[in-house]
Amino acid sequence: MTEAILIATRESRLALWQAEHVRALLGERLGIDAGLLGMTTRGDQILDRALSKVGGKGLFVKELETAMDEGRAQLAVHSLKDVPMQLPPGFVLGAVLEREDPRDAFVSNRFAALADLPHGARVGTSSLRRHVQLLALRPDLDVQPLRGNLDTRLRKLDDGAFDAIVLAAAGLVRLGLAARIRSRFETDQMLPAAGQGALGIELRADAAALRERLGTLVDRPTWLAVLAERGVSRTLGGSCSVPLAAHAAWQGEILRIDALLGHAQELGAPLLRASLTAAVADDAAAEAFGVRAAEMLIERGARGYLAASDAADAPG
Image (cartoon, rainbow, N blue to C red):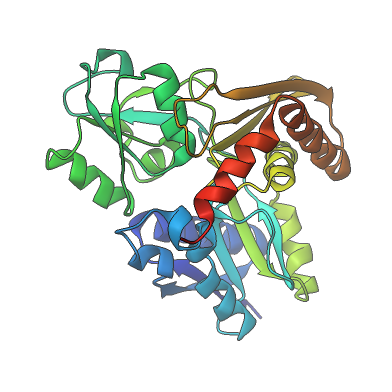
């Protein structure tokens, strides 16, 4: 008898694509018949304020977790970069799928690359991480917040609100919008967010049988890389109010991790950087590798930068 489960998903076009992708995998590889439970989250509803001011990335997953907790859904599919570093008690990541391009994309209707933008050009971005790195590359730019789903952001660009916007390349590729990408930032220009380009499947920790089956979908190289990246963020308390980047990539049998931290209040302050390479064979080694990279940032002054993020979050 074919099993039937429901996948909780946000209702944006990209989120639905991701959920459909996982639904197809479940059917093809595990013989599981999955349906979708579309939901609107608080993160989708609040578009006039920065995420860091209204609760962070957890706003995109809380309603989905509630649906799983109440038994209305058994799984949730997320862009891994949107998943908080600490999941609520009772929830786990059951699988991380093979990564799409993790880089950030430069999108513009008039300019081919960041270097082509005129002095003072208006650039839209959804994250402090991108903001500080854009200013490091081009201090003359007018970088402004840009909220909304992918289609909303593109529409704001097309309506003339921005000269260019920066988006995750993976989302554009998945929706068949790769032609909108004018250029891609190499990781030495703009370091991605932890987990960027990867899809994560979340479920209840007590769903042992389903969790075991999902384990067969795990792409092991991606899993170890994102464990290291999330280890950086977890150690430093990464959130939407912390301009933090972490990216791990395989060089043969060796994993290289790069981490970067900016200042949340002085956005043009020097960026703190760390890089490490190591042979990483299991989950514990991957997480410890990320912690080592975070400790390097701490040695280089991260605590002062993190205090600025805490102050920015403080009420008043």
